[in-house]
Image 1 (cartoon, rainbow, N blue to C red):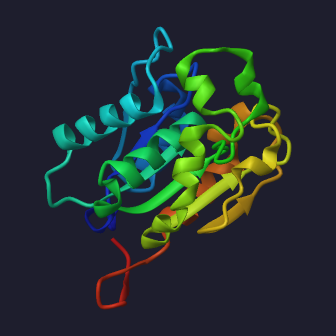
Image 2: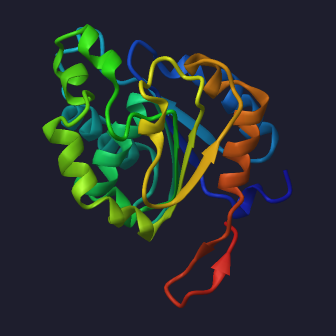
Image 3: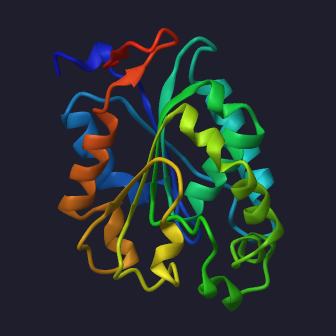
Length: 209
């Protein structure tokens, strides 16, 4: 844990049908390696909240939890990746986050979102207004260390290639099933590697923190 003081805290944002407990194994792994890991519970009990409202919950949690001058790293699972993108691209999170990682996020939508007509699901359908808006200026994510981690064998993000982005680093893993992406050994290893990537300061000098 000797490098803990040099590492950013890590905020974990869960997906639909889940709560923060889905990150139990990842939290344990990160803390064992010296990171401070945080996870919040989003208001998804009735699914009437849209991505925008959930992203504001992330912003409120950040304001309550971290000092204003504290940079942090952000990990979004599935829908949590889209919520995190809205926070980054529309609510100023891009100014505070240094490393942004998504796990099986439907960056270009998923056909499975047609199963329900709730606002959150409608916004995760292919070609939705919200996704089109976020993808129009996805190049904003080039300002941070952005990594999209995904698998061909997803079955919830359909097609699985929806998790690919034209910016950042793309990591495709041989992990079977969407649910395993948050606890499989290879996924945990990929998240750690992304969090260990040095970030460049305003002078272009790389540093690990």
